[in-house]
Amino acid sequence: MNIKLISVIGSGTMGNGIAHVFAQTGFAVSLIDISQPALDKAIATIGKNLDRIVAKGNLTEEGKQKTLANIKTFTSIEEGAKNADLVVEAATENLELKLNIFRELDKFCKPETILASNTSSISITKIASVTKRPQQVIGMHFMNPVPVMKLVEVIRGYSTTDVVTKTVFDLSKQLGKVPVEVNDYPGFVANRILMPMINEAIITLHEGVAGVEEIDTVMKLGMAHPMGPLQLADFIGLDVCLSIMRVLHDGLGNPKYAPCPLLVNMVVSGNLGVKSGSGFYKYTAGSKDLVVADNFKKG
Image (cartoon, rainbow, N blue to C red; front, side):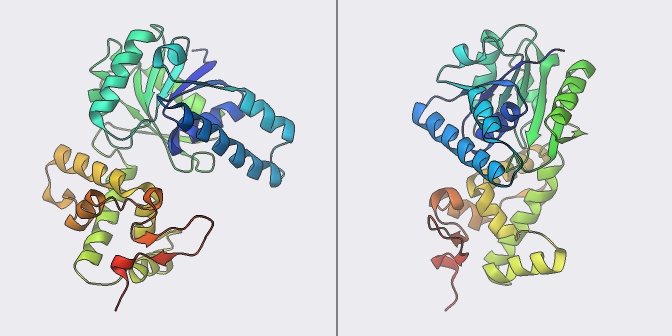
């Protein structure tokens, strides 16, 4: 299949990262969001990330300008996706929101357009079921930060064809990524393994086994993890972690996947991690120091 125009739904952290890598590889990209200010912020973020690449000598200023010129923004799915060869949905990890987006995409996109979701846990078969083209629906799960991380989990739904899978594999390689095919089960591979570990770290904190810094230090120094599980949870977003744990719990029916009550309470209270300024650690703009949040300080 000849893929030239990519539409990306959602201009948040994942969406702008996906738009960035496609645009830098030379694809025309339509970045779609309901909010123009969010789109403007996304373009500014992409520009800053490109500046870092230029500063490292891995991209010319001309390359940066070409990348930015490859991206157009839209506040309408119909206008932004009607001519796309591939759409990558990167909206919030919410089932009903995603289903509604795919219903619209199925209505507005060309019959041959491939519809991909960046979902990190929701069934591709379920998403595909609301379209008239389930054979062209696939999971394309990028890792955060998208411009840096090499992995793309490629998730085949029940009806996804070999041709569509091969097209997405080839595109991923063209982006400089490493695609890995996984089956359509809750959490796929990455989050089926990662999220229970994060949840167990939160349970360990909740039960008073050790403090925030101690838990993260054990995992960094003892297990060679680049970031402790509690800091990583803050980075991902505690609301996202909770959503994925609920998908695992509901989909697999095993009590071991039940989200820790502390995680639930933190999300309800609005302590979502980096995005809200406070989670297990507190975050101050311009500061790189890692400071434990007041609720978890000892003494």
